[in-house]
Length: 381
Image (tube, rainbow, N blue to C red):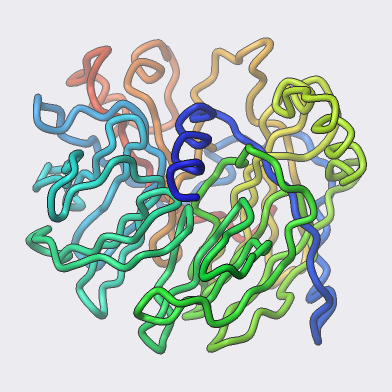
């Protein structure tokens, strides 16, 4: 089962697809959040308290892509799926060290799909797709041990176990777990299963990491659904239901039809008008949603105090804008959201919103590592 999943994930690396349908819970829908369609909001108007951090560039830390970014008190952890490496930087952008252990020996992995950081236990965990979770000391990156687990991404549970996102049916001890969310004990045994999988396909939708922390609560969002769930102890309850004005998620019947005819979901979704590839971030003041509809990329921002949400197009892959994409959010820290600004795109810009970024541009080259933007969202949308 693990090798089958490994092969499927590798073949569909850039865009993969899955679907689910939630089982009824005590709280069926959670809080309803509506994003109304809006005109584009300029980055200078949207982002406040802007700080730019150019990531150091040298042979030991050349980034191909920032797949996932997580923060601790004093470090930035960046997972690059294509390089199969976790890079560690400080908040000045200085490269500190990295985890790259592709192989078959102790502490080595075949292919990892995501990472998780637990500062309280001083652990960096990486998920070897469909096989196990490997754990390393957060400061030294020394190998600590591994736990067998069929998952694509995980988060540590308060009882020492794990919450795991699974996209395909799992078979363990002759028991089939056809669920997106599995609760494991610390030995790797399945204790609970939530959110049944209605469409068993060979595809997985990005992002693979579908957890986030908000106000000390762990949240999870499956693919192709409007629901966000809050995880606590052994419970999975609806936290939000997300709606977007004039937009909808792909119907399960449509996905099944495409699958039965062996059609590529991604190509079909790119030509359709459905929401897909959604990624969420939440802090004290806002819930932010990055998602695709057809061949366009969007950002939705919900102000929790005002109970108002807006979404607007940030990028078209058909007719790319000449403007720098400040909205490529990849992580959060406290009240700040973190965006990735590609050096090659910064160099093309004649007009930048901050003098600090203009000064940084003078030191960049085409193949320099990206610049990170740390910024808060302005209170008024």
